[in-house]
Amino acid sequence: MIVILKQGTPTEEIEKLVGIIKNLGLDAKITEGTGKTVIGLVGDTTILDGKKLQANKYVEKVMTVQEPFKRANRRFKQEDTIIQVGDKKIGGNTLTIIAGPCSVESEEQIVGIAKSLKATGVTALRGGAFKPRTSPYSFQGLELEGLELLKIARAETGLAIVTEIMSTNLIDVFERDVDIIQVGARNMQNFDLLKQLGKLNKPILLKRGLSATIEEWIMSAEYIMSGGNDNVILCERGIRTIETYTRNTLDISAIPIVKKLSHLPIIVDPSHAAGLAWMVDPLSRAAIATGADGLIIEVHNDPACALCDGQQSITPEEYKELLDKLKIIAPVVEREL
Ligand code: PEP
Ligand code: MN
Image 1 (tube, protein in one colour):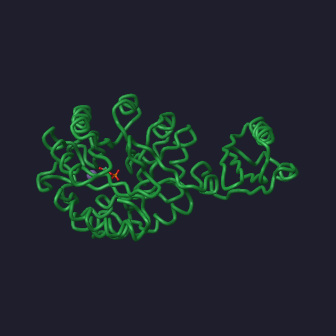
Image 2: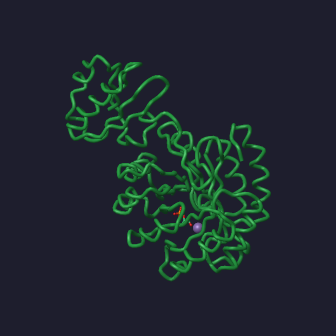
């Protein structure tokens, strides 16, 4: 439910209303819009009599919200959420480009890639230390050693680091060491993990589940936000469809839909969507042209020898060529790169 207050409602009247709402066991999220104050009610609002609220002389309108997500809802907060990571902003006018290998393999590999990305231009460095693999016999990542190598790459380049968390066990280590915590597609509905991440004050990159609807995906963001962490970045990474040519099908419609439904930033992962290196370029351009807030791209110095996802990894040289093309598209969609 959303309560829109009349222009010029005194602060003490807003506080009184919030008090009434909180006494009913609901949470109230206040947004100051252009001259208007909007109170978003979170919780089981079925107990509330909207007519009674409407009777308050400072209330202009009471609206019920159909969607099950509240904090992530654009109706609760009209302006785009902008997430600060060091001196970089995610969301808003600036495009975010996160790049790096699927997994951290050695100090030489991760520091080398980080340095070439830094020279070309990048927002943050990605690299998996804990890898969710379909087969238990595949390379599972360097785990804590991989995290240490990412920290070395950060120290050498100043780039923020993005890496995937697989379980709640290492949440303290991730909170201390990682700049953006990635929740992978396979963990999108690991509700226990989402609840724990909700208690942190860290940006969370939430990938869309393999077969998750947009509503289910935003509800997972809602889990994190309901714990008090509003720093959620959504990531469309392709979904399961009947098509087998590509690894997944990039759901380009998710970009305008998420933008309409939510104020959270959305970035696109063309690498896992296509599963093919040659498609990273056109899908990246499509994503930016459609209004995505950025990209997360797999870049490897030697894709043929990569321990994970080499077939979909582009080289640092191809990354540079792609960035040059994106610089042409960015101003057309009123973005900075
Ligand atoms: C990854 O980013 O390397 C990854 C495993 O992605 P996803 O969770 O989207 O499959
Ligand atoms: Mn990968």
